Image (cartoon, rainbow, N blue to C red; front, side):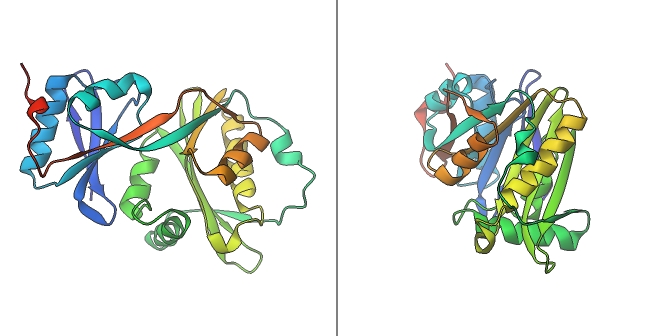
Length: 250
């Protein structure tokens, strides 16, 4: 399903159905630091309710964008750690560990995207995995992106990553590894590939977020040079099954 757009002339957001949960609208701001006005949010919410959605779930929001959502009755369902690397660091490619070699392949065909979606559902908790539409939407989140599949020496898909660039800023937009291949250096190989691509394009800031409780991912990112920022991101949700007086605009 192609995402639709909300645009009030100041703030733009994309909306699509949540993977495997067609009753949930996924509302993703073009800039996660700038929230729509209360009036715009009320209009968008009423529009989605009229389309039959039972709830609305946001993308990751900066603290500066949270307040209007809270006022509209949204509640926090997840916190994400935000990490930044100021410049790609050479130790990513020169660490002493004997990592398995993983061939990197571009994902272009429908079949390869199906493989990525299967990996995504294996890697993330139930209800949080992306389908093909979700992966394609993640790719469109930045003007330029790169999506690569890591395969083992026996040609078995082990993980994939979406890397994006917007001007001088780079993003690790999605990273998923098959749990059967955890601990084999797959994520490190994918990061080497993506960070190398960003370095060649003179990106100076690289951002990534991950679940606050995902210590394995946090340790990996910090080990290769990312630093956790003090502010966490929030994912929020609003049930549309019951009336919310606060949605009215005075």
